[in-house]
Image (cartoon, rainbow, N blue to C red):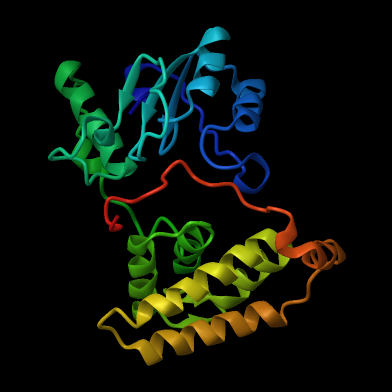
Length: 256
């Protein structure tokens, strides 16, 4: 859509393992070295990144933040902050970032219409955007996984078998390779799965089915060969912190 308005957008995805969560200084620096943007649109992060955004503005970039995370600190001084959580509980406070992107696109078309541009045609996609294994990992890799994420994980495991391919199943071989590549990821997955097992007792689902699929998944993780660096880091264990916390401390779906 930005291209339709005459812009030349470029996509930048930070490395969560190397650059941490959100709009980190490391991620901002690498993005600047690669693209030197005049306008940076931060999606799903940025609400609590005042320092990083100030640095971008000092370099000459404008910044727009599209985010749904709870604000933890002062709001960033950017040209636009689109976050329904900053104004309390409103009618749109349930929206995640993908919904905010749609709302922004809709607002742009209302204020500056594009001839022969139908936003509805951009909503159809062929096939899933991510595999079930990627969806599973996107939730399990959160150190402070919340109740909504655990419920989502349960639904995913109820609806998808565990197997060795990607055809609408959870690819246990892929998950095992990801866990074997980094001890920190392995440890976070291990802790999140333990929390998931505890949450199962509170849910009206086929608990035996979910537990059996978790057992099969974790057996593949344990059987996957681990490199030397992984084994060395495992000896240090929890004595050295391996994770960074995301901006969202508490989900609106998680009770106080």
